[in-house]
Image 1 (tube, protein in one colour):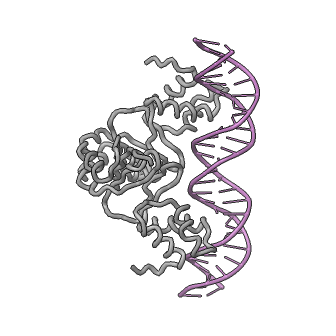
Image 2 (cartoon, rainbow over the protein chains, first blue to last red):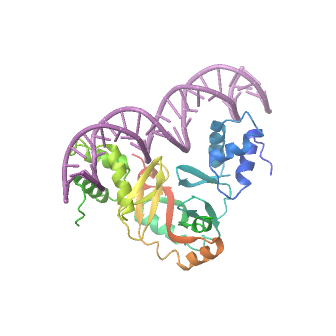
Image 3 (cartoon, chains in turn brown, blue, red, yellow):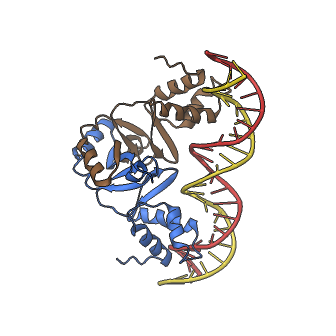
Length: 131
Length: 131
DNA sequence: CTAAGTGCAAAATATTTGCACGATC
DNA sequence: GATCGTGCAAATATTTTGCACTTAG
C-alpha cells in the first residue's frame, strides 16, 4: 500500500508489519540498521509514535521492560509467555466481550470506553520444553 | 490478617491494600515516608516484589511509565484512563472469558495458559469534564 | 551465628528530547 | 523558505542492585 512516507518511515512500517512477533523498537532498529546504516534509534521511536497516531500501529504493552508493537489493527487478542515474553496472536476476542459492557462501565464509572484488550498469560511451548 | 511480616513489609502491604487506586511504588513510598522517615524507595520495590511472589499482590501493567499494583486478587477487570491513567475496577470478567478458550489456545499454540486479564481503555469522568 | 531486611547511592535500562542540519515541496 | 524528518548525544525517569550494616531468631 502507498503511504507517501519518508523512506525511513516506510521501512520502519514495513519491518514492523513484516512479522507477527510484535517487535520492540530496538528489534526494528537492529533489523534495519544493516541496510540503512545511518538510521538512529530515536528515529525508530519517533516514527512508531507517528504510526500509532495515524492508527497504523498500536502498543500491546510493556513486557520484560520493553514496549511491544503491533500493526495488525484487526480485532484479536494476545498470549504472552511469562518467561521469554514471546507474544502470540489469539484469534477472536470480539466474541468474548459484549459491547454492552462498555455501556455498563460507562454508567458505573462515568467514563467513555473506547476499546479493550484481552491478554492471556502462561508459558509458551519453547519454555515448557527447553532443549 | 496476620502475616509475620517485618514492620516495613507490613506497612507497605497495608498501604497498598488500603486503596483501590492501584498505586505505584512511588505513591506507596510517599504515603509512608512521613510516618517511617527511614524508609527507602528500594525497600518498597523489593517488598512489592516479595508480595507478588507470595501471591498477595499483582501487577496490572505499566501506564504512563509507572507500574501499577493491586492487592485485590479476586477476579475482576480494569478500566484505564488514557489521559490521567486512573485505573478503575470493573466487576466481573470471569463471565466474559470461558476457560475453554484456555484449552483452545493451548492446543493452537502449544502453551500453558494460566491466567488472563481484560483491560478497558477510554477517558474517565474527570478528564471528560475538566473544571 | 545466620539469614533476612534495609538505607543509600550507583547502576542499568528504555525511552524521550533539544539542537542543528538536510531534504522536501 | 517553511516544514518535516533525522542523527547524535544528553537528558529523563523508573526500577534494580551491590554493599555494608542491622536485626531477629
